[in-house]
Length: 149
Image (cartoon, rainbow, N blue to C red; front, side, top):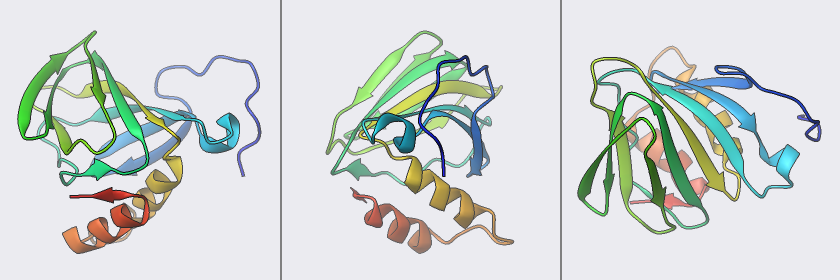
C-alpha cells in the first residue's frame, strides 16, 4: 500500500513503474496519496507502439502534456497532432485514443481526475502474462473502470 505523499522531488523516469502495451508508466502521484483526487503519470511511448482501444471515461477527465516527441490523439474521431509543450484535455465522455507517430520515443505527463492508477495496476498485470491480452480481455478490464466505446 502506498503511503500518504511526503514533500520531495520525483525525477524523470522515477516513481511507481508499470508497463503496458510496450509503454513505461512512471506514476508520480496515486490515489492513496491524493485521497483519490487525481493520479499523475509520466508515460514513455515507443514509436509506432500499440494504441489503447478507443474509449471514453464515464468517471474522469484526462489531460496530456507532451514533454518530448510527437503524439497523435484522436478525440471524437478528429485527429490532433501534438508535440513538446502542447497540452490536450480529454473531457469525460469524449471518445479518444492516442499513439506515438514520431521516429523516437515520446514522453508525456498524463493526469486523471479522479485517480485511475488502480486500472493501470491491473493493466500492468494483464500485460505481464506470457501472452498479450486479447482485445476482449482489455475491454472487460476497461469496462470495470468506467471506460467504454
